Image 1 (spheres, one colour):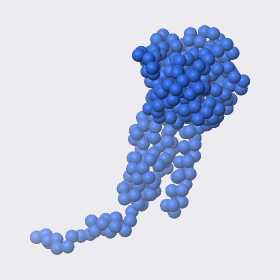
Image 2 (cartoon, helix red, strand yellow):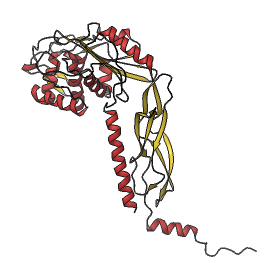
Image 3 (cartoon, rainbow, N blue to C red):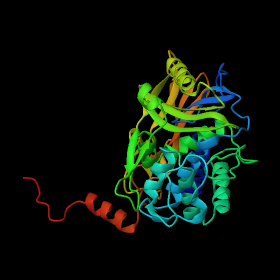
Image 4 (cartoon, rainbow, N blue to C red):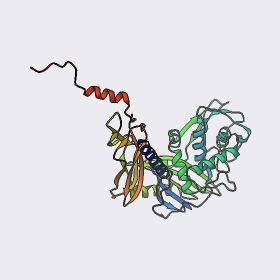
Length: 385
């Protein structure tokens, strides 16, 4: 009986995990169409991926150097920041913006990422691609595959830098999903929020000076980055973000002449209409459940992650829990046993798994014998006078 209950609980846990991953993968539907000067635009809640504002967010378009967000993401996922990269012939003399890599130059992957994201070096993108993927073609296939894993349905990468190429496109929504994943990496967050940096320049007595082109870092309160891009074909493209009062947003405008001002306006609208709501913190205890056939009688259940959501200002969401009344022995610490949800007007805004804080050890013969002996009357106890 206990084995059947365990199997049932694990099946429920798998379903909950799939639900949470779907939500965290950015499946939330668009909330509000917005007028914008951009050809396509989107603003999402970074925590849940929920769309707050949008316009033509699923239209495939060229994206210029905002491509480099995915290049950086793969470098962080597949590479070692201390790797020393040797610049090959394909990375030498790449047209467009450049950090002027020399043929045969040795430079760390970390420094290449600064050159990629601050100075938008097209040559740095190629050097990274060849180092991680072995070739530009193989790396671009990896980029497209990773985008699909993140839920991007209309994204194809033909190069790692965003130079004009047939078939190289994404959407505002897809690009927001990619940026959202990239912003989970502290190194990425640190680089894209840096205004000015220097990296070594092999063979010279001075360093390369890199200046971030993202004007929002100086002009917009709470700005977090992320990446600019421009070609004649793509127009001005910008991936941007900011955090205020517990709410962090990520936005994208594609083919937008007034890119920085429009990004600021969209974020202002987002912060005006939504606020961050935190229902639970990771590790916070939510319930004590009884344990059947276990050495312990009860166990604490806690939130497996922070439970936060963007909530329309003035609205009061509800917190719901879904878990069994008791748990069988044999389950392990960290096992998912339920789900906590933030609900608003019958709609789930966010959810996190509820997990065990310790393993539930089944009773055994030795445990039962010890329990009996503890309760057995002591021999030789003196009679009362």
